[in-house]
Amino acid sequence: MTRDIRLCLPCPDPRPGKIWGDWFFAQSLARALERAGRGVGLATAKRRSGGVWMRAVPQRWPWQDEIDLVIRGGKAWPKLGRRPLFIWLISRPDSLTDREIGEAEHIFVASELYMAELERRGARAVSFLPQCTDPDLFSPDRAEKTLASEILFVGNRRKSFPRAVVERALATGRSLSVWGRGWHDALPPGTLRGVEIPNAELGRHYASAGVVLNDHHPDMLAHGFVSNRVYDVLASGRPVLTEDMPGLPEDLRPAVFAYSDGTFAERLGTALDDDRQDRSEIAAHVRSRHGFDNRARSILEVIGHA
Image (cartoon, rainbow, N blue to C red; front, side, top):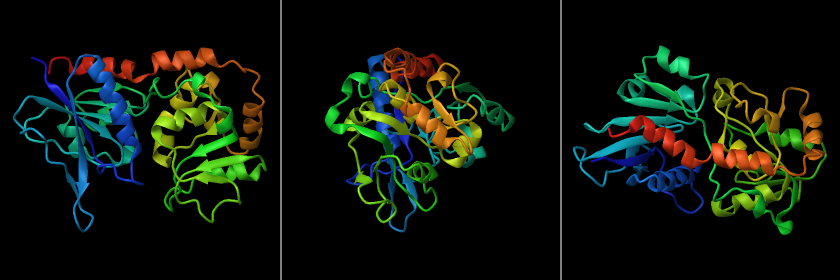
C-alpha cells in the first residue's frame, strides 16, 4: 500500500491579508499529486504568543503511514518521529540547516547549480526540480482589456527587501502598475493599484500586461533559484523582465528578457517592443513541460512506494 503524502508548509495558516505564496504553491502541487493517484494532506506552522514558531499538530499520529514533503522556503520543518522526510527546496537556500540536510531522505532542489553544495554538505540524495506553473491559472486566453497595463509588478515591499526593480522601472518614466503591501508613500500617485490580487485572478493580470517585472531575493539570485513568477508569466503568454542570473533554464532563456547593471531600460524597451506578438508557442511549452503535473511525476518517481 502506498503512503499518503503530507505537504508541510513552514508558514502560518492563511488569514485575511496574510497568505504566503507557498500556500498557493502547495495547493497546486496537492491537486497534481491527487490527479496522479496519491492521497495528499497538508500541514502548516502556527505562531505561539511571543512569536515563537511551532509545527502544526499532525492529523495523524507519527507512526501511521504517511510521508512528509516539506515545501522549503525560509523556515525549517524538522523530521517528525519515524516519518520519511523529503524536502523540496524552492527558495532561501542560505537558511537550510545541516540538521535538515541530515534528516532528509531526498532533497529536491530548484537550482541545478546548488545540487553540488547540498552534496558537499552531506545530503543523502539530491535531484534538480525547478519551480513551475499551474496551467489552470496561467494561460494566454485569460487576458482581459479592462485589466491591461503597460508594465506590471506584483509583490510586497519590506525593509529587508525593498524591490529595487520597481525603482528601476520608475526611473524610465514609463507607465507602471504596482500591486502589493508596503508601498504607501513609496510610489508616485496613481502607481499603486491595490494591495492584493487574489491568486485565482493573478493569471488574468499577467496575461493582460505588456511586460511583467520579476525579481529574486539575493540568495536565490546568487544560487540560481528561478522564481515561479517567471514560469507563470511565460505560461500566460507575456514577456517577463528579470535579472540575468545563473540557473535560467536553457529552454526558457530565449523567451526571458534578462537585464544586468546598466541595461534595464534597454531591455525593458525591447520587451515592450517585442515583435513576437504570438507567444502561444512558448506558453504551450511552459504549460506542458513546466506544470505541476510534470513536477508531481518527478516527485513520485523518487518517492515511489516509500
